[in-house]
Image 1 (cartoon, rainbow, N blue to C red):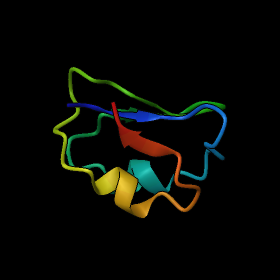
Image 2 (image 1 turned 90 degrees about the horizontal axis):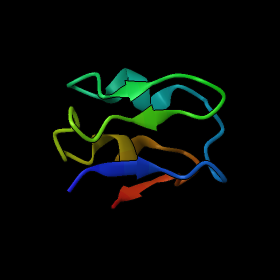
Image 3 (image 1 turned 90 degrees about the vertical axis):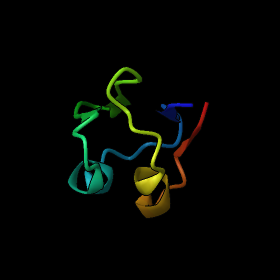
Image 4 (image 1 turned 30 degrees about the vertical axis):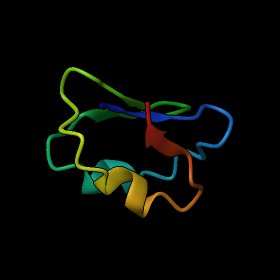
Length: 56
């Protein structure tokens, strides 16, 4: 199950992008996880300081 970033909680700090081992996260005003690339490892959720990332 892919992870998703909450638009309401994401602060676009970039922490998740630096930690994603498969480069599934793209930057913007709010970051987005590509579910087709996401490896479901949860690393992004573990490092998100805003708690904006969760499993779908």
